[in-house]
Image 1 (cartoon, helix red, strand yellow):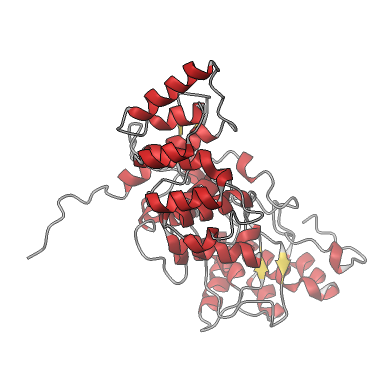
Image 2 (image 1 turned 90 degrees about the vertical axis):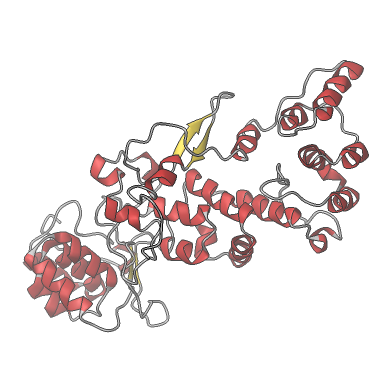
Length: 408
């Protein structure tokens, strides 16, 4: 970018991004490609950003989708020529990967056919050498942080084969929230590490949809690119096993609790397991007795609660608020007096937030007519914690619809 070509450079030393924050001259990029042929695609990408159509033609590259996306956003005459030329090909290739900062020129490594998928990082300056460790700390300006009306339409419309350059965070989060495997795979294809808000949406999708849970089970077992993007695999494992409990999966627990699998805190939402299954689970997995007692309270299975015979617990007292039967709160308060003990604090404290997620708050704050490129957060009255909410999104999708009636 400073218009200087190194005398020598090993492939391991070759930079990925050579077009941001500054552009070199066309002659500099030409000299670089001649001296280091393994950098032809990086040079082609720089040509797209700068609009150097003549040099791009000289490189004779495969029609590559990230170069097409870069050219589309360059707003240069040369960039438009590059974009039109690539899009004229019936088959296109995915050779560059911004999140991995890799160039795959071998046939067994690149993708073909490939489509424009919005994975190219050209709108935000985040092609970094730290694997995006600071991506959540970036302050987004209004343009980059708020979805346009055209981008918002993609929340409820099928994704086009060639996805335009759009803000994808909220699209990904809502695909996870709804347990939509096809949309999630398409939008998460870049392999960027998921944020905690992304993770919460994935958890919600798993808890509500067995097919999404089953798909995630394979991702973890096979350690796919989607699993590698998860910073806290235990969150996914907990959600999967919770879903299996809620659908009364006897086979999974026939030999006791699955080794190496973390215990979920909530096993009664959004579905309620059968009472007979909870009794079976108590016999096979006695280490789950407090979670089973909580499920018995919410589901109002007094005989299961009696079988567990739980001691006084702050957790169970909180869960009793989710039951219409006052017996459970009264019983817990009675046990406190009988045992002359103080309430055990909820450990870990974030489990209170998990409890509150089951209430699925939606519209919480006044809607201002715009949605940011992320789900919102709601601050809980206890412990100064936050949980995600989709209130603005739920309202945005109905904006301007009016009366829904037949045209006939």
